[in-house]
Image (cartoon, rainbow, N blue to C red; front, side):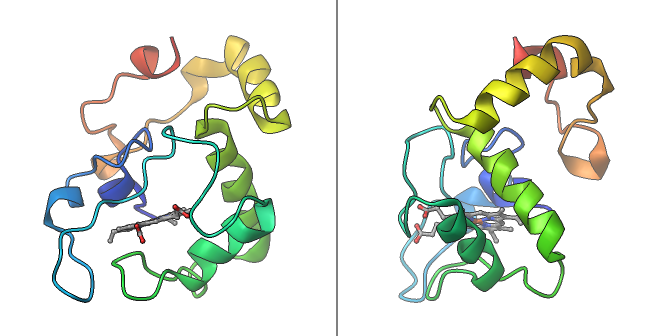
Length: 125
Ligand code: HEC
């Protein structure tokens, strides 16, 4: 879905488009850094998170993905985003346990699926 173009391959808000984004008043705006905090601007629950990328955020470059993501995939994405937060969520625990034995099976996120210079080993060490 190319979320990485704005939010960055590791969700730090540093994708290649990040520096060029402006809001509807032409002011610079930064994509959310998922590792920066425990809450999202638009709420704290999984349902809030789901709504953000299904509806998009008005007045910002954050688009709606309702036409591109099926509901079941959207819930997968919600749980994935939870693993990026610095929180002891159930998702983070499952993710860490899975990662311990499966890290090398992961396909990096980035340009042409090639990782955009992101090293999987660095990501998960
Ligand atoms: C064109 C650039 C762009 C793309 C592509 C994009 N986003 Fe965003 N996103 C933004 C910006 C900019 C914000 C911050 C809006 C704000 O600060 O008001 C944001 C905010 C968010 C937030 C809200 C964070 C909060 O503080 O509540 C979530 C969640 C999010 N994006 C998820 C996604 C997901 C998931 C995808 C891919 C399916 C995606 N974004 C793709 C630019 C983008």
